[in-house]
Length: 160
Image (cartoon, rainbow, N blue to C red):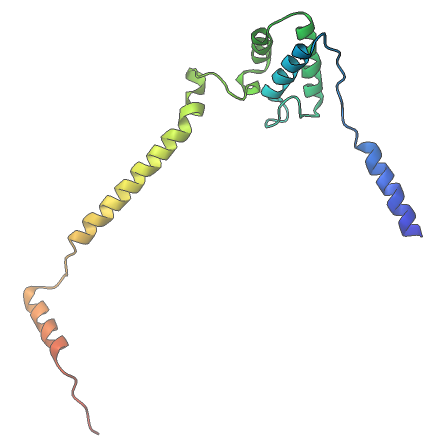
């Protein structure tokens, strides 16, 4: 009975601490709601790093959702809102950062590594093929003849 009571108390305590923040914003139209949803889904949370603002429960994500809602209510465009967030948090908040001098490594680094790996693999294969075609035996012709003669001899049975 004590175990059951302890399990119930623990379950209530865990359920009480698991609260999800739900934003309840009133929009003038369904188009505005869709615009808001698209913005918060395409922007990354600065704290969570791999979650968008819509899915993050971090306090900064809640603040950013409120800020985006406020900017939408003021009539700002998507480009203005994104520009504001990029100015404040950098290109990190974008899942698809623009191709600039600072992001060249991000965009073309993986392809460069892949090409470099294939070049390295090709060099290794060519070197091994080159070594296999010119394999010196290390024996002079006299030694090779003696070896061939020894290998061609039939074994002699020894009787004790």
